[in-house]
Length: 492
Image 1 (cartoon, rainbow, N blue to C red):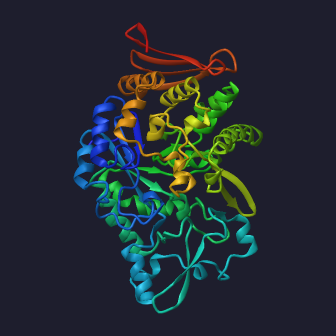
Image 2 (cartoon, rainbow, N blue to C red):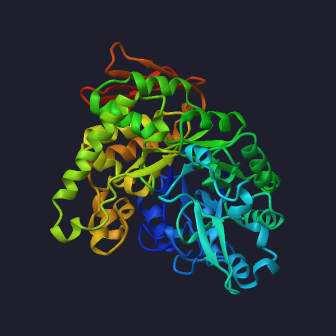
């Protein structure tokens, strides 16, 4: 098994590049062997929904994708990451089916969070609702009917195919232990999905509540400490949370970088981006795009509200313009204009829809510049498979009756991939990725400075006698990358 490295990492669904794990391996080996050194495979287990995130069980790989042998073969060539849903389980799981079947006699009765027992007054008060962090209309409670006809209300943060579990339950902890050990036998890094929602305390946001969140982390990290497995926390929120986790020695996501880069490229100013590069954690995984969209809440405090509104407005105008060009029969379907989250009575945009390339107006020069900055930003560069191919918004998902999030989840055939990678601007990107994987300076000391005016940045890495420097002009969207080794300088 390859261990986690500070090199370029792909994130993809098991069936999004060629159709299954064997096809993914073939495409990586033949097209991206030097550009991609790690692969985060989004949930590849049997699931009842949310494209894999409603996991039924972790015992095997979904047969539609392949087998554990396919995972292990990939793991001999690429360092891998996999997901574990710390907060919830599928309603089709054996545990939940047993709960519905046997009711109070089920060994899993306490595995789930009973709404009336959670709230001191059996229901949240007005004060509770004013601070509650909610991901869907109507709040996180959902009613289920047991086999005997009894109705119970349980905590359900996300979709109807998922139900939350209590990390302090004996059965939940046994579930964590069993499944985390199984996954850790095949991959060196596990992402804790929806980690911040596990810390539920009445009268709070029920989102990353301290000190309870650290208690949950201690419980869930026990098997990973014993196996030496890296943990990556998946949390979309303002940057102080990421800094706290990084200070505890864990990998975190740089979800702030995408919006900061969009702002810098669009408006030709680097001050907000530069500030973040000077203070961001180094023990992190960087992103520009994800399977869910482009984070907005993650840049809070790094961009002002007005600056956020400015760049969100630009991206949404581009999205709506593309959507308006669709046939009338599709316009009536879910356009997924933006994802909204509720914090008490206040609503805010959580994520923007679409691909990063489309968000940039399909600007090739700006796109390669943004990716180059990502490659120079401290942390492991993780590149979403659609972003690797500079994919555009795929509204055909609406015609197939799929949800709007699928706009950014196009499944590429091998033929599509081979055709797409011929684009000159992508060849330039791939050359930069090869450099990022092989230049030892990126394991050294990082500096970030303005290059003489508000439009420019100079990012540098140095180790021993090797120095890598990016000089970028965000007004002209031009840049140079140089490597100096033993006093000899060359341009990449």
